[in-house]
Every structure is written in C-alpha cells, then in structure tokens.
Length: 85
Image 1 (tube, rainbow, N blue to C red):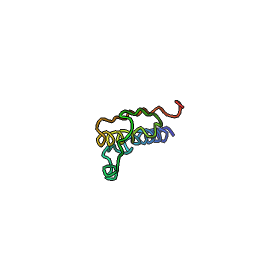
Image 2 (image 1 turned 180 degrees about the horizontal axis):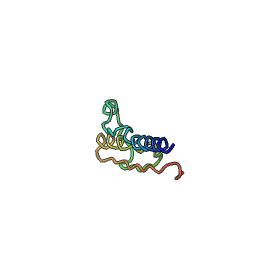
Image 3 (image 1 turned 90 degrees about the vertical axis):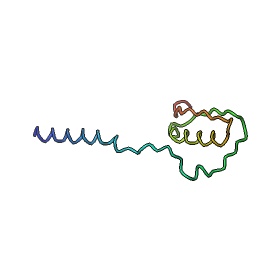
Image 4 (image 1 turned 30 degrees about the vertical axis):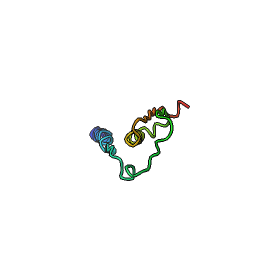
C-alpha cells in the first residue's frame, strides 16, 4: 500500500511541476491586423487609464502601437482589478 501511495504522490508532484511549463508562451509580437489598423491621434496628449487585470497583457501592445503611430501622445494603463471599483 505504501508503494502505491508513493507512486500517486510522485505522479501528482510531476503533474503539478509540468503544469506551469505547459502554459502559453510569451509572444509580444502584434498580429498583422494591429499594424494595419487606423489610429486617430486626436485628443489629449497624455491619457491615464485603469481597469481590468484581464487586459494587463493586451494593454502594452495597444500602448506601443498607439505611441508608435501618435508621436507625442502617451497612454499610462494601470491594471488594478475589480477590487478597485
């Protein structure tokens, strides 16, 4: 019985260790449609925004594209989650 328990423990630990390694890779290259999008640079030269942590990974791509296409304009995004509301 002890061997079976040790095997299950080893199997669980191996699965738990492998799970984070199987996560999606980090690729911050914007897709082609982002580079072809029309960006209107009107409005204030500096924008501060905050919102969902779900958008935290998408916002740097947006900010980079916006800043690249609108020199002199900046966007500062803070992901503060639902607890801030």
